[in-house]
Image 1 (cartoon, rainbow, N blue to C red):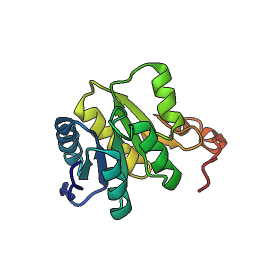
Image 2: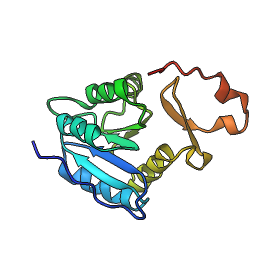
Image 3: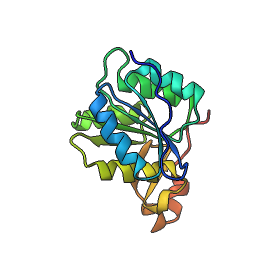
Image 4: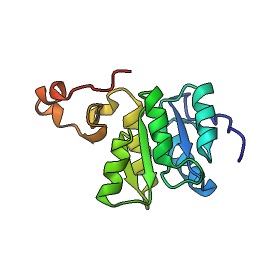
Length: 167
């Protein structure tokens, strides 16, 4: 296990993202992509380090791999969601519908499959971490999924989604 990573400054001291992946090369790719969007990035290569960083640093977004040894990403996602409403993006090679559903049921807000385009992850992250993100995506907390903002077209849709995550 490696020690906690110190924050690496993004452009302009913007939102803070925690990237959790057991593959160091993957964290480097995601870190760079997020820094291009102004994020300050923390990295962890296991669940225990990620939980430590979440206790000791304010975080605006968690980007989380599912397939990790010891504590897998779904268990970590569930533990984070039990304590926080921070947006969580699962980034994983698991692409079956059952995998996506499991990720969302464990508390993820978005689910991106590998291989992915770093720019897409960076933009999704920006939209998730910035309140109302430019209006393209909206977090539906009752459903736990980022989706196209149809509420902009039909304003009552957002009001009909119950917020059953009172914490």
